[in-house]
Image (tube, rainbow, N blue to C red; front, top):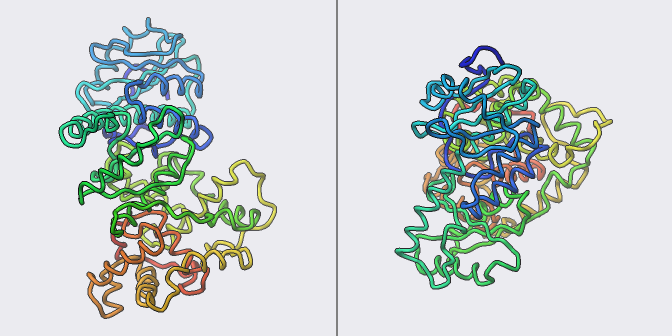
Length: 472
């Protein structure tokens, strides 16, 4: 958008950003480099956000500055035209005081976009200046970058506070509990995220220190992902979250992720891609923020999505309603969310592939790949095959058929909700998956029961008058 100075950008979404984490992401083609930068700064929060600003400059070809209090430039790309700032004083003031979330204007021949950053008063302002007006996708990337800068600031503040606590309680002589190790999870307040670099500069005993902390206090548990490059931080986070759920039900309160080949890698490429693209096609006509909100809501509760994107919970609800109308799905239904998550995983895996040459299957049911998906399902459910775990398996199946609602499951089984919860915790330990919060573990369980022939068909989706525990 462009026009008079101070004209609000109608595509902007109000509300302050929440705390930091890697899962707020720009369009897929730019994700790897951004995740690397965010991961690097989570590992070393003292390096500042110049790298993120430079990344935005490389992506959009526009000059970028971060303007702070008294409208002074805190950092900028080398070619940023600082002489335009006096003309921007009125709109900078409105953005800094929170009266506007974003704006677009022109100063002579320079097209300018401004994004408020953070929730403090006065706020800082991200200013982009160039010869051309930003496209919708470019404006969204600018907005995401503003959120990420605010998120990194929050992470730094949380990390500093945590370091102070560790120095008073758990500081060891080698200093491994310092600010270079942990950040607070933006979604779950009780979680801390530790990124352990595997290089020659990393103390080899760092993992042992974490285990010692768990051994010293029963309040701690440790979930460990498999090794991943920084560009796969999101995958590592999800693995660690699944492992943490298992660790909480393990005597030593430490568990590593028990990985299996993901389902999307086993399905026949052409059929799976045709199905996934057909299912996701309605999302293409929606704003990018709506699609991103929907993706995150498959893995986090609405409050967590709001914190990650820096928007209100009501705004998250509005975006999800728009997606539901376009997709024709009820996203309160665990089977709908599982299918949508699988479709997104398939398209991400084959994002550079050519359009599928086979027609998409009818309905919402994913392709089975002959016996491939059934074999995957049998392996996933294998730990429940033992006769001793028959009640656990029956409870899980009923829980999925009850839309992951423990109270409805208890009524159908003639037991108590406490009994259902206890069996779910046993299942978490046996399967190595987090089942009691929204996330990939529940999605995998849905697909496992479906492809094993033990649950209703995906095509039988219906309304979900009572959403599942913790569902978006």
